[in-house]
Image 1 (cartoon, rainbow, N blue to C red):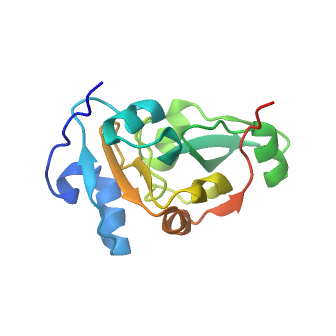
Image 2: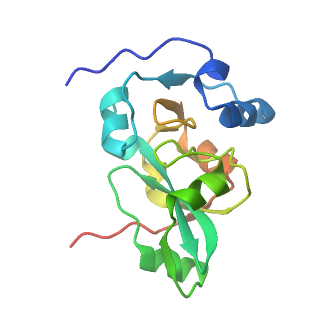
Image 3: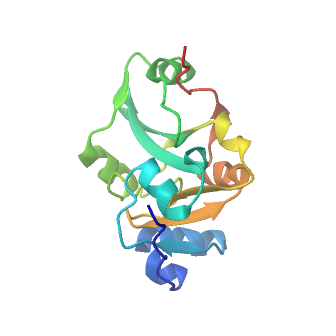
Length: 169
């Protein structure tokens, strides 16, 4: 599969308006790339960008005892819900419904960025994200991504570094 050329334009015209506002407020100047085909999945994003699957950051909303929590995970791994539950001291953790994701973050599933959300939520960032010099994450739409060093990304998201990756046998 050939990598489509990203559409050249300014960050403010490419990123979701809510995310563009967050970038401005943070004084962060990052290149946002827009692709003609959606990059809703980590695999689609990695193909579009031309990077390893593990360099894609998935921003996943879960409900811990009914309270939204954001988990940042690399694209090649799955979240172990039991590890998230234990980390939070919660009784029950499950994936959030699409409506709650949009209500909490301001974005649709497939385009949720790691920061710049409508409401402040607790953020857990899997330590595995730090294994790369740079990672790519959604810029608020299923068609846009941006690149940043993982330590800065976790810091801007207000994330706590944890080990919540599902272990393979």
